Length: 404
Image (cartoon, rainbow, N blue to C red; front, side, top):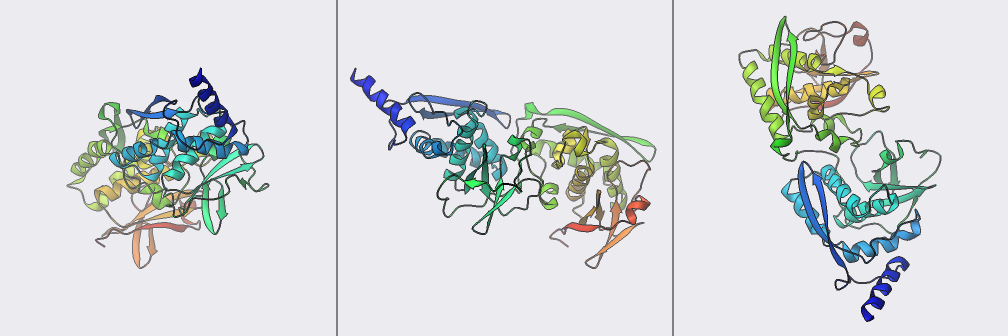
């Protein structure tokens, strides 16, 4: 009977809001089991008696939820850190891990605010500076980041930029311009890291999760073919990745297995060709092997693929074609390149020893125009649509290898 009274008291405190220490003697050990990057993971934690209370979509429940998480889920943080280090996760992939774990603790379909509180907790305890804000009946999660982001809401707090991380949960449709989101928590994490949207390394995905893909295209009257391996699940981890600087998108690396299945064979295929002919071959590879479709028709909004996503997809737009072309030229030849932004198009120009056709003079160097996006007419190196050549453009990214 005495034990029952203690349990009831703990449950009352859990909902009422004044828990101060972990009740190990009465908390039940649970396992979080989830799939992440193609592998199964298990993390143990102590669940509060009667589980986590419902948030009731009220900001007033935030302090108590954080106390509960601190009391019962702090031991999850080292486990997350271990996975992060072992898999060499970028901040973006680490956030996907946090989403997985939060979903196991408080499923978003049952308690969206509670789920979002969990994400805030793991980000904050991992050294980032997340901020929760309310706007009408919505709960918005922001993260301090100095990365340049274009298609999701930004909030400035204390002259620092905060990027909204759950805009997609509201179908990318929140009237931020009409109402100012109001912060939930009274203070922010001090001495925090900026969340970096740059993805400099790719995790190692399980080899058995890759699929074979044959890429065929026409080049100068002949059929060229490359057999590669792609990881279809990669799309799931970039589905909500925002529109970033082109230097971020174009430099997202290939995973090791995709790289080893394509780049060495491409280098072998081009070893007897001049760099000019090799770049043209890559241009035809990207242009003719992947179908074109505008983001507005596919997704209803702008979305940019990583180069490996484009390899794994059947359809992509001009920015995705340009990104894959850029990536392949960099891996095979590592030549200087510039990315050209027109009002409705993206192109890449490459610095070659023997420039050809339409060229761009930029910072004292001559770059040859390349068209990696499908067109009605066949364009070779240095050729482009006449109407496009008359339009204004901006050099939005310049790549200069260290050896130049």
